[in-house]
Amino acid sequence: MNRISGNTQLGFVGIGAMGGRIVRRLLANGYKVMVYNRDRKKSETLIPDGATVADALSAVSKTSKVILSCLTDDAAVLRVYQAPDGILAHANPSAIVVEMSTVLPQTSRELAREAASRNVHFLDVAISGSTSVLEQGMVTLLGGGDSEIFAAVEPIFKVIAKQYFHLGLAGSGTAAKLAVNTLLGAGMQAVAEACVLGERQGLNREQLLTVLSKTAVVAPAHVGKLLRALHEDYGPQFALQLMNKDFRLILETASKLDLTLPVTEAAFRINSEAFALGPDQDYSIVIREMESRDHNKNVKEATANQV
Image (tube, rainbow, N blue to C red):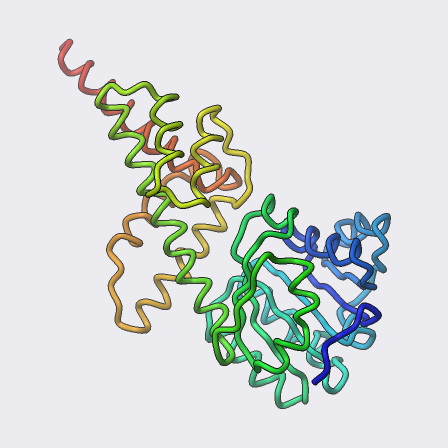
């Protein structure tokens, strides 16, 4: 299959934190994009950038050669693609689907099979990177599906990402994303524990977090989190509740494979308990969660000693 051109009509479903930014990059690079979101107001925010707003999923399917989507969870993805008024029911023959949500690999494989039965090409292309990284076009894309179809839509990937990889058959992209986010979530918990350990030993918090951010052992994805935590800035770049959802997917997948992931399980527990601080906060708020635990413990010990 030939590579798509800049004149190819694109459709995009799911105008959330990631989806809206992807669409803006596509529009800024000359692509024609029709967008759809259940909350039409979110779609309409892209009109000044040049997007066309669809009133129904079927309109996106019937009009677009390449249909991209970035949705919240498995249920939303299955609904958008499998509903009678959904994408697959109305997609043109030989259309290409690029599904970018973080979902179970089995969901990707199920949709790939159904798409193939309708002569529609399906790729699962998961995104690794935060909203701020996406705005700069510096995310990493992890793809699964037919390698020839993947190559055909590379011009789109070049607009969105710094790098992109084809990892195998359908479901390989989402499988890789779960592996990547295992490191992301468990690594953030390790950083939080390092912070509280250093602080408990009397190290200056500002100096400690600054020094940790400069060490070789802290992943690039976590360096910025440390610097923002210096100022108690936990505004969402990747929300705590989304990391929590991904932990659930990771552990569900591991269970089906008869794998035990003790570090991930522990990180998931702390992540869940940090919901009291706000599920819409950035997932790095586990730093505050660990610091709060230590503070509360110290208060209890001091009170007990006074008694």
